[in-house]
Amino acid sequence: MALDAESSYRYVGGGPVLALEMSGPTMESCLACAIEGVSAAFAEVHPSITGRRVEIGVDAASPAAMLRDVLEITASLRANGDVPVTVERAELIDGRLVVALEVVPAGAARALVDWRSTIDWQHLALERRDGHWVGRVVADM
Image (cartoon, rainbow, N blue to C red):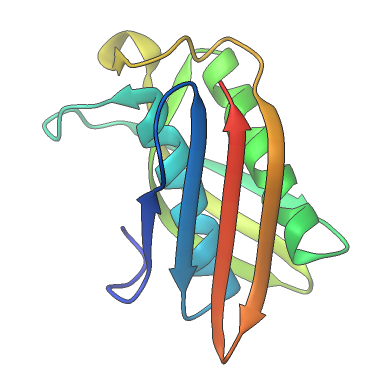
């Protein structure tokens, strides 16, 4: 995780359904965990491969909507041949989430599933609980 040592994600279950839980001290760090966790479920990238930086921006009315939008944007990157690897920066600026990602060409990654396929988001949640941010992503792949 590129943002901080307190943030994490873990996979729950297995099979054709992706279930990911993430937590972090800030909403931005939790969103970064979601991006990295979903991306890691799609492809493996050798650490020696360096990518290029891509910036995305998301405006949404709620944390859960922001999670959905940021995952949709990163899915569109995969569909266009780029695999997100790490989140270099994620910050809220006047209510807009700005995320800087390192991406590599799809040909440089080992695909674990077909990343061009449509993802069916079954459950997306992101909320502040007891002074900490927690989230869950469940998707059919």
